[in-house]
Amino acid sequence: MIWLQLITAGLLEVVWAYTLKQSHGFTRLGYSAVTVAAMIASFWLLARAMQVLPLGTAYVVWTGIGSVGAFILGITLLGEAASVMRIAAAAMIVGGIVLMKLS
Image 1 (cartoon, rainbow, N blue to C red):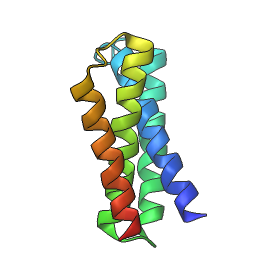
Image 2: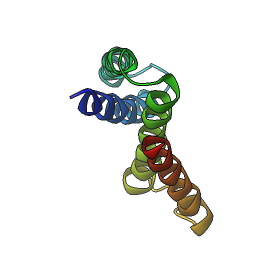
Image 3: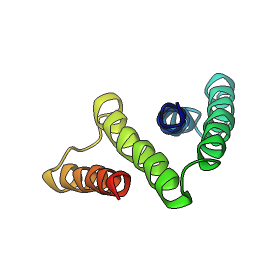
Image 4: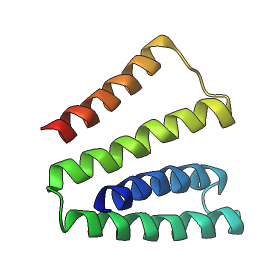
């Protein structure tokens, strides 16, 4: 159950990163509201996960899901570049998450 909360927290990080971009500096109210709500929920779930999991593991998984998820959304929804180097960097982040979990 705690891992589900942590994964959900990471996915909410992707949501708030995307809606933060779409808020255009908090000038678009709807996106701004979703950003703040997703931030609060993401941090709350992360805090709950950190009650059980080690700090390093929880934080690496949370930020890794957020960064790789935002990277994927940037490519698929915002037309950002999908170069070999960027994809390799994202793969290394995923590899780091897996190694952290296994350790």
